[in-house]
Length: 317
Image (tube, rainbow, N blue to C red; front, side, top):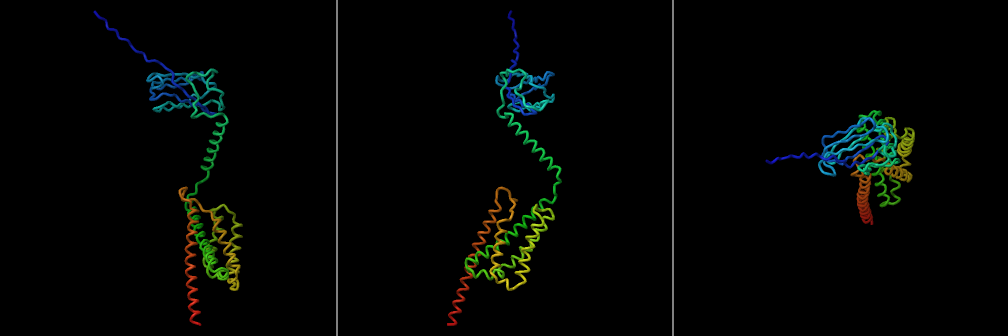
């Protein structure tokens, strides 16, 4: 007669690797246990954390557990998140301050180690906390400020205004520069007749420089803009425009050249197209191409004038 006996195999209880880090108000634990199930995480009355779960750890698939008695009191609320690789636990401190160590006992448990992925010393943690507070305060201030429903329209208007002014003054600047290279000092005396129409247009549009601060579209002051625009318009419309004897003076060249130079290199060019394209570089390229085109055009016209002059001179002789 044979007796068959069955032996039951009990599952071995093991301790997982646990890594910790802290902030002034929080404790972070990372338990190296993948595919964890049957999680049982609780906080006892003596500030002791009890952890038990089934999962794959350093000793394979087993039941793992550990307990930690914290250095100081913590809040009873515990948040945790289980992933395929680990279990993350977050615990709030009762009093927000820096701990010298994690556990009440001075000797660190063998399964416990610092989490260097999240580790910060006290000074770094204070800087991080300060940055978070500043971000929260900034968001709070921004949330209290009423959003302007017409912000996109205002930006589009300012963009188009600056673009049109840039193109107008750059045309004046390039036109005068090319004529100066080709005609020399002779270009001083007919500047008004060749560029006045465009300067009239740009300076009439410049009246918006006074209106924009009143509407709150720009942060510049009203009075500085009014003084500049009024001063230029008096010179352009009253002195140059109404006095014909002034229109053939060389001073017109220097005034127009100065105004166009200042405006071209002082326009605020908003980066509305993002970081992938520099809009200011695009306008500078446009300015170079315009300069070359007008130079070629004026050179061609100058040659034609010289040919006509020579042909007339031959006919006279």
